[in-house]
Length: 353
Image (cartoon, rainbow, N blue to C red; front, side, top):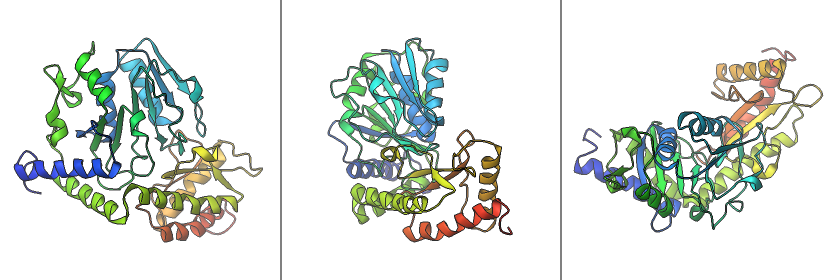
């Protein structure tokens, strides 16, 4: 870990991380994978800045990250023939409205709403545009249809856990073809540049990074990949995440004061579970009282050392956000549930805090 990432041992570790990721995810032949700066955000931005502008763009936005990509496309890149397909927290946009003559930008799993696309059936196989998928909390926990994803991104700290600041960028052949046949009209910052002399910079996909990665983080990621291999790979990780979601589902079914933020059960995330607090009549209004109660609950749980950072995202309806990825132990989720009931009662001043 004291060696340069450009040294032979450092570069070998980065290549190992990429190849183990490729094997675990079962990427198709011809798909390339690289480590890029600035977490999943940097990976998505590299794709947007390097690939967009050749066609019209459809952006799907149903929570904060999709809304952020919409701002980049419309306001920062200034793509005039861009369309934003939006939905409120808890719902998906109408996927049938997506035009695959356009480039399509979307999150697979919206971490701040707990809403994910149910599958890849809605993505056209004969599309003319590219699909650019922010898959950061879906990779390793969802059976992703790689042949329908021209670009996919994720970050190390999500499904497998670990330290942030590093992103993974996956490019399919159609994305590579776009990079080598099209140059954006805007200048591309160095940390987003994927080409060199008009050709794909292949060194990025061979373990040579744009900037300096943390080799400690690389070792941590390798440990996570080795663990994932040892438990049975992605199919086993999906089963673990689904099992964890099931524990919360059973609790929600028997609890009157809480419900899933995701309205349609088919769209509920199995990694980032967002729960809303119902009001006294069970309507689940996003008003000051539920927000205050949710904040108080999160504070109580943290004070007791039970759970940390479980309040819902600041722009989301009042509630809690609980991680259920495969690195979360089943017994820990089971132990959490009585504390959630306790915190709700304490925050409602119905029992002493």
